[in-house]
Length: 449
Ligand SMILES: Cc1ncc(COP(=O)(O)O)c(C=O)c1O
Image (cartoon, rainbow, N blue to C red; front, side, top):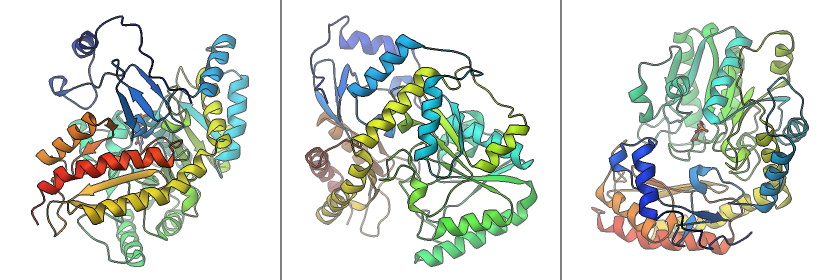
């Protein structure tokens, strides 16, 4: 992996670059005046670099998405080759990159017969819902409060977290339910209790909503931004059985959890189930090109051979996206990155445990593969340092410390993420946790005992 720290030709100053970005573009999920954009000029492997050459360890793979690391030469070569051969043709064509990616995905995404391509995760979820509604002839969709499914109208309504609020009232027909493991309310103390109580509650909701009106339930297989929450042992097979009983499809949103992040290609492989539909994006191309996909089981694929699928996008099956995804998946497999994520779970776990033992303000750390999050607490009772959807000055200082010390990660509410690219080495992972270790002195100072 090249070290990309060489200075770029200074076409404009960093200050001018920031000014133009702020004056003529809108930033996501924020008021422009509050945005302090991170100026970035280059990247390589697990590092990103400011125009002045400051090296920053990417401990969140940007948006949990650059899974193979930055600027992989084999992927860049595959993209350049595709650019030279064929950049774009309309979706009703057969192309070599589309055929090759289709063959590869059918091999590596268990249980899925075919794939519908989009430009990102929200569009993948939108189309998964369309497919489910057209297949079942039903309208309602169940989603969960601790979830994020995208920024479009429907996916905002599927989303449970506060990013939804300003888009309400949105698309009708979405029923939101609690998760088996929310932070405050408890369905029980053991996994068996949580499963049984949660699914009894869910079945009651299904009955009240009219089971024959519900097309699908959409779940993040492992919840991402809302907590890196792994479902309790045994929950998924029982959920699958409950949904099957009522003819409700299961959609796994693996936009964040899929493509190796958890130490398996798809996160549902951990839980002994196959969904009816699975959505993916982010890691599908490691964000080298905008691409999402919906995978579907054979029953759905067959249904749409004789029934029109009422959905389309200009950039469906974009040849450059197809070639990029194939190259990314091959790199991921050939370079053992999924195995690396599975192997490094142990080191991440032990670092999280070490920090919890050392810092009274650490509530806990959770991880599966290289999908991790740590929670910060206010007191020994375990109250989160910041309220739900709120902030605390110590968390703001922690975020600033990480930025100053050259660690890129997301700090939100009472938590911060630990989601490096899957090519990270043991030493680089320890480098990240060493910075976190020093940063947690800040939240310790705010710990109330
Ligand atoms: C679980 C999940 N689903 C869907 C999305 C939306 O994907 P995109 O931003 O590519 O539309 C995201 C993005 O963060 C996500 O984490």
